[in-house]
Length: 304
Length: 228
Image (tube, rainbow over all chains, first blue to last red; front, side, top):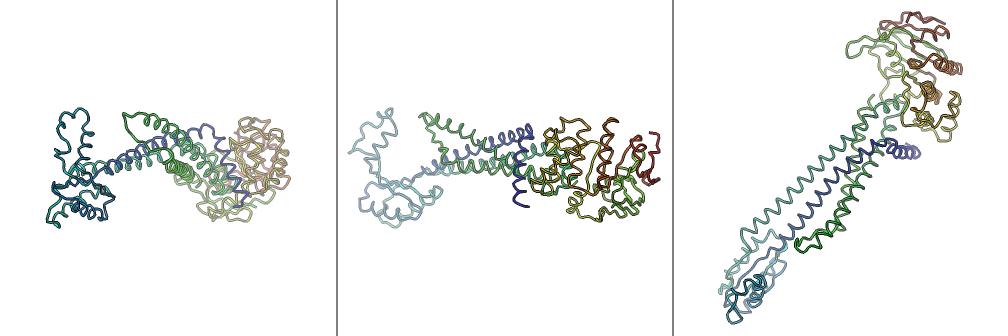
């Protein structure tokens, strides 16, 4: 194929989108609708994921120390825990600080209950707050820390606490949310491919006569196929760009209204961070479907 | 130009459309193919432009053995055969000019040459002034003229016309026949299936009559020979 012929196919493909007027509108609309549903779901899954990630990473290990642990022992422990490869951060929280934080957590309603506790009369132990790199290693690291007790005669660790049970449940839930999300997205992607290619197939069915005529005039299959290819790609491109635009407008206004509302306390992923991924995916998928739908459907008629 | 040797065509449903046809059509001939409906005329035509393949026998058109043609090669043979139909078969969304030009784009002719040649044939069929109209804006006779222009634009050696006047009134039909006669005069072989008695009897040419899948009559300057 010469370059001039290639240009001719491009031109014809562009023209065909307009020549087929309402048929093109129908194809583009079906692409927009399907990709929109898919896009909304992807955004939802991404956000749920990010919330789940945050929940996971907030899991900490509380290492409560026995009352008579001295500073030297404490520092040794801090070093030993800090040198574990899974651990990202070890922070010492003195019992005084612990009491202040406890008061804050409980709020003004509980002020009465905590009355009488002060520096001299503090029931809280000193503790080490341990954060890990990979949230799922929390139970394992906790066991490791507990085992440190055996290496010291003083048995400085009173208790290792990480919300055993509830943490495992949290991980299970976040993992399930992720998996279900991806299954849904994959299913939706498949479904929209099917829907769109079906619409395109119908619009091409209306043109099988044209294809027959082209063959009678002596057009090769490639000559007939190329403009259809370009047309399909273009329809997919237009459809996915429209979808991306609609999603952008909808998502940014939603982000703005949610962010302004302290009650929800939700942190949505800013569109800037995901638009490349999202739009890239939509445009790629849209064009793929457009091309696939048009070339697969005409293959049948080319055998005339 | 066209030669058939003992050609049989049996369709998958068991219809024996052609039963051992042998015929030779020379360069520059004008041949009418007549006969009752369902006698095998259309199959005869379709075999020539390779819409169908023979079940048995040999067909050659312009030196190509059409029966043995690989599907990949079909387009190239068709470019040497112009086809004209009762229902015109123009591309509905293209203008008259674009319809004719399409046949030249297919052979990847340069744009300049396409423009020159398309205008030439539009002049020949008398429709240069309506070049920018779409088929739906043209009358039946005009659409058929455009179809003929498309058929001849690449200078084919044969034109296959399957009832080209079937949808047209007598006056318009005469115009089309004069056009085909002119094209034949310029050196193109024409094979035309028809039910039009007046035309065959007034414009005397070779007549092939097909009945029950056989050629039952082959006359030089023949007549229609049927009452309908």
